Amino acid sequence: MQDAKTPGTAPDFIRSIIRDDLLAGRHHRVVSRFPPEPNGYLHIGHAKSICLNFGVAQEFPGSWCNMRFDDTNPAKENPEYVRAIQEDVAWLGFAWHGPVRFTSDYFEQLYTYAEELIVKGLAYVCDLNADQIRATRGTLTEPGQASPFRDRTVEENLDLFRRMRVGEFEDGSRLLRARIDMASPNINMRDPALYRIRRLTHHQTGDRWCIYPTYDYSHPISDALEGVTHSLCTLEFEDHRPLYDWILANVSVPCRPRQIEFSRLEMEYTVLSKRKLNTLVNEGYVSGWDDPRMPTLAGLRRRGYTPEAIRTFCQRIGITKSAGTVEMALLESCLREDLEVRAPRAMAVLRPLKIVLENFPKKGVEEIQAPIHPQKPEMGQRTLPFTREIYIDRNDFREEAPKQFKRLLPGGEVRLRNAYVIRCEKVIKDPVTKEIVELRCTYDPHTLSANPEGRKVRGVIHWVSASRSHAATVRLYDRLFTHADPGAGLAAGQDFTARLNADSLQVLENARLEESLGGARRGVSYQFEREGYFVLDADSTPEMPVFNRTVALKDSWARISGRPEEE
Ligand code: ATP
Ligand code: MG
Image (tube, rainbow, N blue to C red; front, side, top):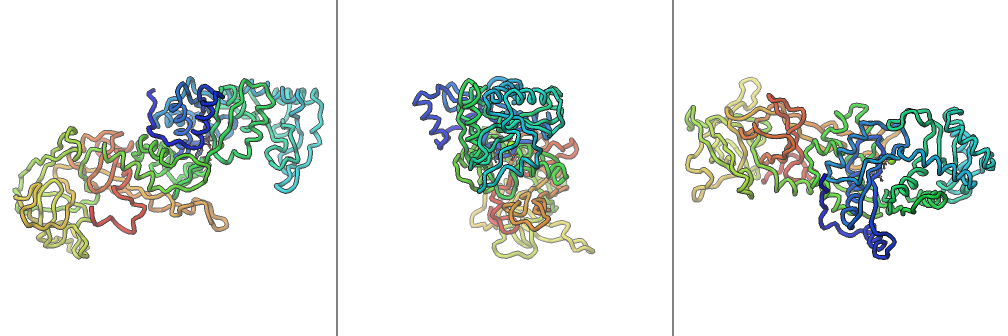
């Protein structure tokens, strides 16, 4: 696998720390890791962490990044997520060092270090139940109370812990706790849990274990066993850092990684929490983890996002300790920048309105050549069959319109993109519904690609031939939620799903594609002129291609209503 480059990544506080550590000789290389829990698909927030962890490993010579599944909670994990997460990291363009690792690879070592803590008098088996533990933990202003089991002897603790391992006790009846300080101002240091009894089949270790280590206990040790130098995580772990350091200081691990925290990515009009994304999938609010409206990497990919655009986005948002919500417009502008230079152009009419060109020969066809990319002649030309019957978009015609309307009106002229100037002579309506069914127009044969002297044309609209075009279904997407922060200010009894946008998916069943799109391929982004960037969806059949709109050509987040007038 070839590693992607993240050119020109600006130095941030983490990169500065790493550089200083290398200059001071504290390390000779950086070893980082990306440690997802396989309890859901990765989202755009994870991309920030991936670009950071894999990015620093690329930037400092001789360095690497491990891929480690943090699989200590089998209740919520599953092998589908293990597979999908690897696929997403590789798709983003990154290669991990050596094999894929699992925290469960270290269960035996973690167990041995736990006995070491017991022998040192730094861990004990506690028989309090979950409610009792909570009740004796204290608060931010009051210290906790010591467990009555805190002063068990080393021998008794070793005996009980070994019997926990072999399954002598009920789930939840006992746990192993660190023996630190029940009066610590940091609640994480008040004798935190290290091991719980849980009879669960694990996706990697099967039924070998019935006790599972906690995240706080296993993470520092896994980092140390892998020789991680800098353990980069999000800010909610800041208060856990003293525990991270305490564990490493008290077991005989080969090295002492350093934990550094940075702020999570939050984005407007979406949710970035696997728990909430799980709800959307499980309760059927979306079609799956890869629904194109989802902020997951699988969803963004299906929507038509490119790894390059996501990496550019992660580079632009940077790494800091200050929390902030990023606008969707920033992600979209990174995408447009990328697609603008690469996407082949084509015309597609999303809401067809038929035009009959009365002065064009009945069976005539003129094959017009148009560039596949206006700035890239090397991409070649495409053929646009021009015929007597064509389609334009219903939104490009109005019987009555304000002066700013730069498209077709009764008696008005407009240029067909890549083709001729036409004039609307007559509007044909359904006698019953009064709906416009067809326009009668004439075309001016002297206007192909050039405006005759002094000719005033209101605007340019796109079109396709009626007989030589393909049928297609087009899916247009809007923001998934109606509120910028879907979780904030909810009424009693409401949850974030109350803020889902009922109009986030619009399906246009009767779209028409220009002939050249008959050869459209999956994974290629096309610019449908004036409409945006589109990709072929997996739901396509040979008879009925389905295109997803990845993004409109202009910022749709700022729009007030309808399409922009000037294009
Ligand atoms: P979630 O709340 O979505 O479940 P998580 O932090 O529990 O997120 P993990 O699988 O534990 O998810 O995350 C793997 C790594 O990705 C962690 O180092 C975590 O800090 C990082 N990460 C997760 N969400 C974000 C985010 N929104 N922004 C930046 N990094 C993130
Ligand atoms: Mg987590």
